[in-house]
Image 1 (cartoon, rainbow, N blue to C red):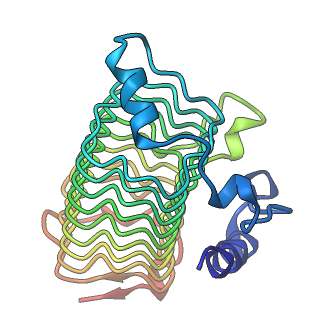
Image 2: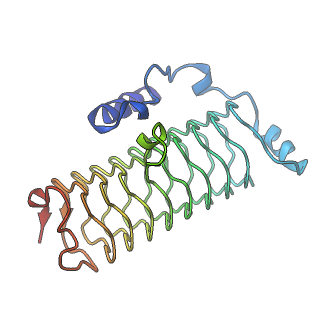
Image 3: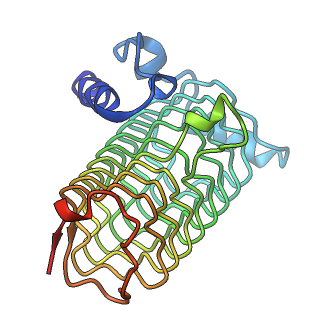
Length: 259
């Protein structure tokens, strides 16, 4: 399954992402680092019980059942957590930068204020998760974000940093039906072919984002910014809160599907 996912993500990256955003290159997803665990749930529970800040940097936790654990504020940078079960876990303020969480179960997890910079979340399940006010410049390719709360999240590229300016949120082919993105910063994000039906995009900054093939049917776009966003083949029908001229500066508007 992970090898098939690698092929899908590599194709997605080749199709539109920059070379600097290709962490899949040269990675063996069948290696022990990507499939095995060096700790158990009991080991982690014991560390939590000490009351000391939890630091699991670069640990291999693949496949573990960590559901419901309190991992708030934990340092989980560059951790391998592919296919891990974190449903209902508290990850508020946790640092998950550069972690691998392919096919992870994050249903109902609390990721408020978490840092997900360059986190690999391909095919992850974030249904109903609370990811508000997070740094979400992660790869959510084919992830299920249905009903999640990304209000105030930052998916944007850091254009003040020459090397990091190429990193951005990727929601390519993600399921985000009914998802709350209120006031999120999605500037330059890759949202191609995503399902955003009925999503709340109120006040979202989508300037220079790529929305090719995305389905925004019935989405609330009140106050959303679409300047220089590429909407080629996007479905922009039955939108709520749309105003005259809102898409005036969008790119390829003549190629979008509209009422």
